[in-house]
Length: 197
Length: 158
Image (tube, rainbow over all chains, first blue to last red; front, side, top):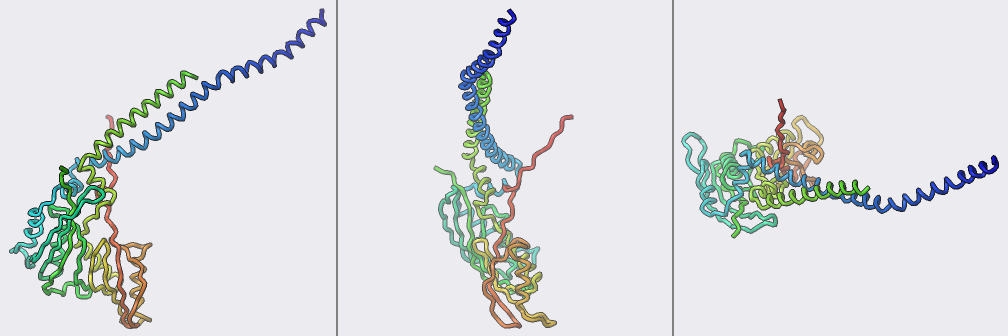
């Protein structure tokens, strides 16, 4: 009797690990496809979240620009200068008729005289904006008057003028002493953005 | 495991939907003329206007600071070109070229002053009493409002 129960216990010690091992293998076999599918889903989620982050960052930049424009700031004024068609009349008026070309009874400096203007409507740039040119010849009583006039055109006038090409007879040793009448040719650039038809 | 997979797929679909919505908003912004111009100003695609008055003032100050004479002022494609003339110091000194070297140290690549940076000088001529060289200064674009980060308003819940 005692011998028989001893043999039975020995059998359990042999069979139990084998059955346990088989059960584990079966579990792995059954669970592996499900785990693989979950792992793939996790990879897809990570990729989708990364794409979302990048897209939201790009959107945030545009929203930031919109907010700056809406605040009615200097940026808004710069944009309004560019966001208009090429108007020969408007551009010529800006160049010929302003406080620097009119005689100013309050100032001792003589007005700037624009002796020649020629416009070129230019063409569209790869970024969609158009770029025109204006060749202007200016005569003034001194260099400072020319500098003040051109500074006005490129900062406070209604059009987006840029300084493309200018040659001034400045000599830092003669600063403030050179009061001779000078004539200066200048090439101005003009950015504009017409409505597309 | 299949329940976890379902939740994960649901989150993925939500991210994809949010991305599609954001892309639609971006496309709408790209069609806005004002936004387009603002973006071009922000990434320096448009040449910024030079403030000629402050540029000339800086130019005159640069000559004084370096104790040299600038003769001529030409601006083209964001580069100022001029001739530098340096004289030997009244109290002696070895060579007038020292004035040009002084200017190079002040306005060199690593030590940009004012709104411009001195381009490399490759030739100098003249005598020990008076040296001259043509130089170019690259104008450094001033950061525009379009390029400045947007200040965010802070609010507190009281």
